Image (cartoon, rainbow, N blue to C red; front, side, top):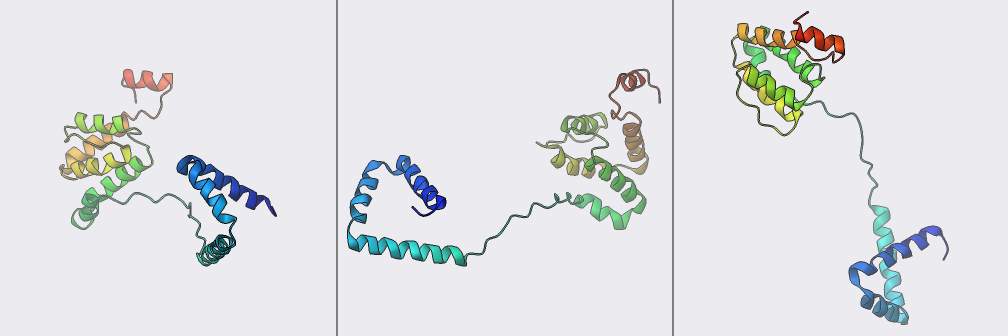
Length: 171
């Protein structure tokens, strides 16, 4: 053996024993001892190395996560009702940043408490778009009231004082 990498390659080949069983290994060992098979194996390994060098090595980029796209219902609203769009866009940004409704349960409960259609999603991120879609359909007055009530009762402060303020309805 010349290098540790060659030894590692042989170890990896030996790990294939479990997959193929001992018989193919024995027959391969007998075949390799013949000069024709040695030559054939030499050609195969050389060609595999050439192909391996010609394949460009690509690294997976682990850049910043893509921001979720703006829900379609919100994007279409921009040209129609600018004020409503601004309000919902601000709310949407806060939702993405988890400033409000930090869990899937919170999103679902908010929808139910607000009289909106039930949000059926398996993750919080997927629940935001249907929630925004339901809010778009509300009149401006109701929309403002629902968002303001949510902001007033935000559970961001989970300290004892925060809970007591919530219970005693202090602002």
